[in-house]
Image (cartoon, rainbow, N blue to C red; front, top):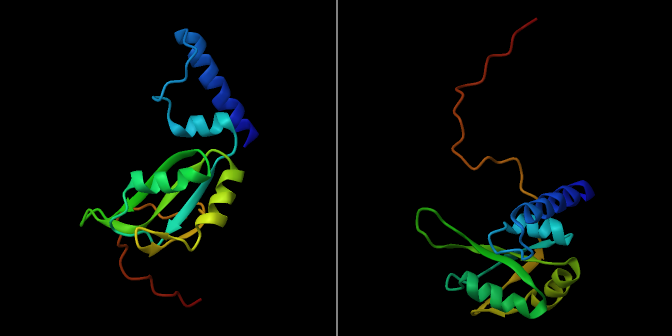
Length: 140
């Protein structure tokens, strides 16, 4: 992790010197901002109402610290919320405070559940590849 932060720092500082700019603009992706700043904490938020927007989610959680990103996972077919989302905080302390304060509290009429987000599994997200029936076992 330290190597990633150092690499991100070199990229950002090198880019600033190259372009002779002293202000980090919003065009720098959040991942580099997170890496430059230190450890950021991503929270899983479950039980979200279908009427909750990303803006509303961000505003509700911004009471407990600096929200870097808030997104709600949408169904591709119906273009409707799947009922869960993620909130990324700038620091682990802010995220821990948000978990304590927001877990089990109502948001837009529904009780939400908040916990640290788990890393993604190896699922590629595409359609599974059909490989046919299994090979018969050989008798040796």
